[in-house]
Length: 196
Image 1 (spheres, one colour):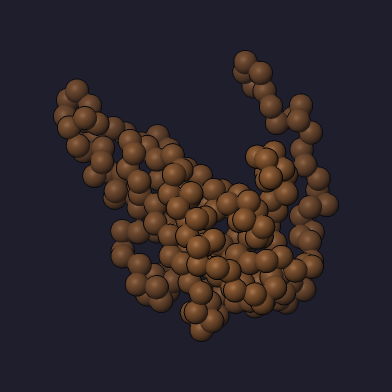
Image 2: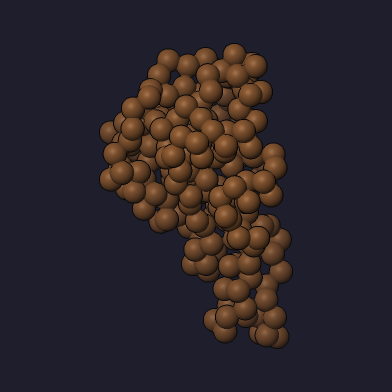
């Protein structure tokens, strides 16, 4: 599949077949995700791969799966054969930008106008989503409302921020999000040439 097909085929899927994903496939997806950009090559992203059914159910609870089910979706978090919890680490970026080659002339760390650790984390998430499509899989994304509970559940260090949960699996027929009825914004409303 070429890049354009992968991008156009990617969508948030909320129902998966009950078929395990080969370990080699999961590791290929995660290895590619490690190649996303990172400011100063900070490499502040980590991924937690969860395949144990009891752990998947516990994570699904933290991600509010019951509310999706109440809205008519399948239990797509606990029902996915694999979950990836993408994490970012702001402290890793600060440590990197306090190294000699990144310090400002006055010896101070740069001021961060944007939290680029989240930008880089988003890039890593997109690489997982595209990697899933490339491997013949589907993926979704769910936020987590109680980050501290997820940290405790998965033993995530305090300086590391879990950004959500990516369920992965072979796609099954699913209910599409009502948000899709909005349609994609026209290209002329989203691409600006030269200036806004």
